[in-house]
Length: 355
Image (cartoon, one colour):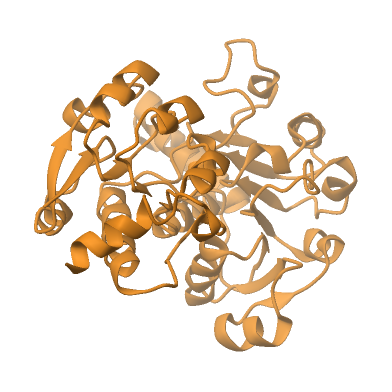
């Protein structure tokens, strides 16, 4: 039976499935679930002795760890982006495939994004705060109604502009379509005809999306070319009644320009879940934006009780596909099979399970 080290989130259903093939050892975060409880370099080297498969969460797997772990043959990452904590180049060189749990946050991110759209369509937070503070009584009843009549509107027939139509953006488009919204998007990597037919989304250039949208959702992946993709010039194109949501990546948005646009009422509202510095400092300029103009959440879009199920399911599917196909699923190390060490590492592992 294969030896597996598991340091990521756990899910009982998929642990049972993995245990049919692997003798599992849990360590680090997987034991107590305390954020930041990652194994150190020295601890990883010790724990990886004799290990064939590593199901990793956020532990830093550097080249030193990899070269000191000659038994390691396959890495299953619970993340969409293992490049943030796994040295993929070293893995390729040493013949160790890294397979990611692509799409683990799709439902969670899209649902929170749409939740924020609805919260910016109705003054739910404001009304709740006032009722909790003042109670609901005859003396404030009309004032509460006035707030609702001034600020409440329907998502129905409004235009949602999605920046980045990957897995999260496509799922968000389905939610928006179900509410009767018009959905437009900017993504230079998709085909207009296919997207229109399958997702009922119109592909436009960036300026058109900014001009026509009642809500702009930022969900693109970061590339060297798209840092500050949404800056002062793009924000000036937005309707004064429009709102912006960033549940994607902070590098895509000029936050200072957004704060200025909100404070000067050039756009109606925004909601932010990701930031350049996390946690935010106590004196961060973003707090200067009035709370009725800006909803703040603490990088929670990708989290849900179900996320561990999604990522473990994908990791298990990757695991099985690895042994049954030469076309490795969700492979973040595309050149790994060209390594001089592949047959000693990953290739040897495939042969062992077949035998």
